[in-house]
Amino acid sequence: MHANPMIKSVTIVGGGTAGWMTAALLSKLLLGRFDITLIESEEIGTIGVGEATIPAIKVFNQFLDLNETEFIRATQGTFKLGIEFVNWRDKGHSYIHGFGKIGSDLMWLHTHQFWLKMHEKGEVRDFDHYALNTLACRMNRFRPRQPNEPPPMADFDYAYHFDASLYARYLSKQAQGRGVKRIEGRITKVELRAEDGYIDHVVLQSGETVGGDLFIDCSGMRGLLIGDALGVGYEDWNHWLLNDRAWAVPCERATVLTPYTRSMAHGCGWQWRIPLQHRTGNGHVFSSSHMGDDEAASILLKNLDGKALADPRLVKFRPGKRHRAFEKNCVAIGLAGGFLEPLESTSIHLIQTGILRLLALFPGQSFDPRDIAEYNAQTDFEYRDVRDFIIAHYKVTDREDTPYWAYLKHMDIPESLTQRLDLCRSSARFFKHSAAELFHEESWVQVLLGQGLRPRYDPMVDMIPEDDIRAHLKDIEEVIAEYAAKLPTHGDYIERYCKAP
Ligand code: FAD
Image (cartoon, rainbow, N blue to C red; front, side):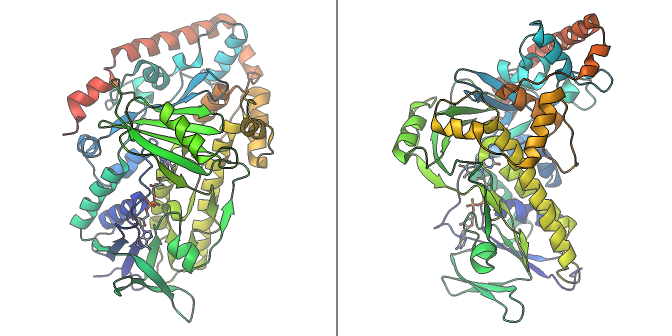
C-alpha cells in the first residue's frame, strides 16, 4: 500500500557512495511505501575516492542497524580520531584536529583559554596533551568508549576510514535485500514533461525507459539531472578554494596502523594519507593554475609509505555548489549537488544530511514550493558553513613560500569568516550561531591555534588565581596521559576485534 498518493516511485540515478547511501536509508526507513529503483553504469564507474569520514557517520550507520565490527571488516576499515596537519602552519610544523572534547571547563571558560594564558608564560606543553583524542593520535592508541564511562573516555569520539567501493557494495547488498531494484546501464537521455518541466523518465542506451515520481540525482559531478536536464547552475568558489584537481593512488599499507588521516601541505596543495587494513589511500589535491599535472603526480609518488599498488588517477573538480539542490521533482545528493575539497572529510557527511533533510521535508500531496525553498536554504547554509571552515585552514597560516600560499594568506575571505576570525583574535571566543553549524568550538580552536592564530585569551580568565589554573591544566594533562597509556594500540584493537578476512 502506498501511504502517499503522489509519490509512488523513487528513482535514484547513480550508484556511488551517494546513490547507495540514499538507497540504503530510504529502503530501511520507508520500507514498502515506495518502489525504489537505482540506475548505475559500470562502464562509467564511480569516482572511487572518499574514504575518510567524521563522527556523525556513526549515526547514519545506526539508522541502518549496521553492526560496527562487521562493517569495519567488510570495508577493510580503520578508526579515525582526527586529522594530522603537517606543514600547514609552516614547513616542519604539525598539529592535530581531533574529534571529541578538549580538557574540562571551569565555569563557562573552556580549556583553551587557560592554556593560552599559561602558554604566554611558557608554562604548558603543546595543545595535543590536553585532549584524549589528540594524544591518542600521537600515541596510535584506540578503543571505543563503553557506555557510561566517565570523562575523559566519555569525551573520546571517532569516525572511520573505509574502502569506498566496499562501503557502496555493502550498502548495495543491504538495499537490494530490502527490495531496491538495481538497473545496470548508461542513461543517454532525460525526458521532461511538456506541461511543467518536471522529469518524466530517463532513457537508457538499451532503449529501456525508467520513470519515477521523485528523482534523486546521484550521478556525480556531471549532475545529469539537476544540471544537464534541469539547467540548475553552479556557484563556483574557486577564488577561495584554489584546488581543482587531485591525483589519487593506493599504496602498500604501513606497518603501524595510525588512527588518523594525515594531510601534508605541499607547495601548491596538500596530500592525504588514509590508512586502511589492506592498503593506504593517498592523493595530492592541487591547484592546476599553480602546478602542472606531471609535477603534482611526481610529488605524490615521492611521498608514499610503500610501493604504489596502481597507476595514479587524475580527478578534476570544481569547488562550489549547485544554486539549488532541490529543483522541481529532483533532489541532487552527493557530488551532483556540489563539492568542497576533501580537507575535512565533509562530503560523505553532506550526503548523509542531504538524505535526512529529504526525509524531513519529504513531498506530501504535492511538491510544495515552501518545502523546496526550505530544503535549498538549509543546504545552502550547510555548504557555506563548511566552506568557511575549510577556507580558514588556508587563510590562517605563516606560509608565504610559494605564490599559492602567498595568495591564500592575503586573499579576501567571506564576511562570515572575517567576523569569526576577528572575534577569535580579540579574546579566543567562539560561538555557534546555529545548531546547523557542523563544527564545534573544539574544531575551530584546534585548527586556528594549530594554523598559527595567536589570540589574546578571554580577560575573564584573570578572575581565576594563577595557581588554580596551573593545577587545573596539570590535572587535565595527567588524567589524559594516564588514560591514553591504558588504551590498546589501534593496530592491536583492529587485529583483535575487526580484522578483515
Ligand atoms: P560518484 O562516485 O561519481 O557516482 C556517480 C554514479 O553515477 C556512478 O555510479 C556512475 O556510474 C553513475 N552515473 C553517472 N552518469 C551516469 C549515466 N549517464 N548513466 C548511468 N549512471 C551514471 N568525501 C569524504 O567524505 N571524505 C573524503 O575523504 C573524500 N575525499 C575525496 C577526495 C577527492 C579527490 C574527491 C574528488 C572527492 C572526495 N570525497 C570525499 C567526496 C566523495 O568522493 C564523494 O562525496 C562520494 O564518493 C560520493 O560520490 P557520488 O556518489 O556523488 O558520485
